[in-house]
Image (cartoon, rainbow, N blue to C red):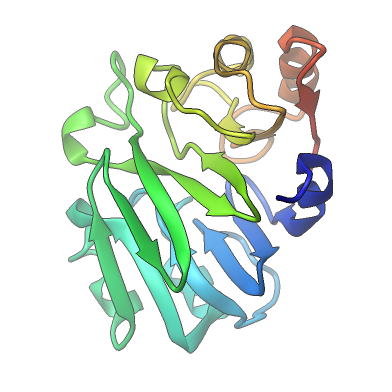
Length: 215
């Protein structure tokens, strides 16, 4: 099992919620977006939902190889059809488990209970990825729901920008309930929220939980 601190070196965030992880000889992306180059190095692309800042066909094309595999919510299969044509595609729903290209994962509901942006009935998801003996939770666009709080993980990547998702204080309260070893805040400073959200978030997280800044 890799130490969480060491695993942080495997993760980069291009912008917003565009996450790249290189671990166990596998390169995977979650919601590739706003890429300035075309590495075409993805073994797996995980998509959380169909909003433009999470499903960007032009950025998907930049990371894909001919053998890239996709994991995406069943609700967006048709919308993603052209971008994923010719590729292996696994569709998922909330509260499922699966394996793709040797990587095991679980899906977690991602939604707003009281806002219209991410309805629960759409079946959009976050992912818990199992890599290097660790559980990595990438939440997608969600509020601080009880389902999110029930996730057990070593590292959490959570949105903090507010409006479309939980804000900095709400995300910190969620982290303090979840108790991961480390957290990376995402989804702030561009499409939603501001760079100042990081300081508000970090100040409210229990000091025993490492807050790692990548944006």
